[in-house]
Image (tube, rainbow, N blue to C red; front, side):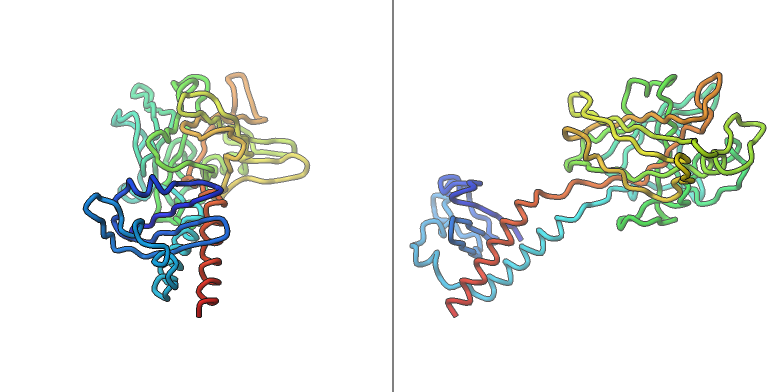
Length: 337
């Protein structure tokens, strides 16, 4: 069913002239006017000049008693708007992998795409290492394996993010190695939303199992990182850019925080809002910093797991206008009964 909403008066969304120039294809038409409301169901009949007949109808036709059928259609309209008002989670549901495996760019693919979002990768075949985004479905991790096994590709929740925001071992997720100094991602974005029709208003993040292992276990001889103690911290900075690659703000989030008596390490999917961005974000880059640093830079593993993103909800004023129109229509129907 096609739904059209037009408003006359203040605020002015459309005009009678624009309606006359539009061919009616059927659906529910809601007319909002200061102090009055008309709801009409049309089957899409047009006259010979392409003008919807309901626009040529007399005022008595426009003011005809609202039927139960029309109110039922209006209720469906309100339900549709209420449903759309909730944030939608974009995860990695369209990707597939063999069980307990990952993609890390070793095929020189340079990027992968999931549900309209592009994730960039830089793989070094000489060293067998990568920077940027990978994707994985690892649900098992053996403590102490560190970089020798699949631990660096295992998200701490041991599962991806479902559409309802919970952990699902059947869902795929992304693991990003954040190299803000030596890879191409010192300048280039890691994530690209430019082809996405909806606006993104937040991200779901977690640590990797490897990071949790390093921060909570006795120090491994093969790794310079030490377990966190009082005062230690690990923070990710998320840099947002608009369609012109102009920076629109920075969001900071602590992946581990042992300051002020806390012992917090993120081990599940945590939502981080982009509310601080001053525009519509189209690209993301990341930087991870830590209190544990050595001669060659940060000792703490520089990984972050991404479960997905949430899209922006519609403007409250739009939903309020529709609900207000329905309330007036219902009152009018009761008076005419």
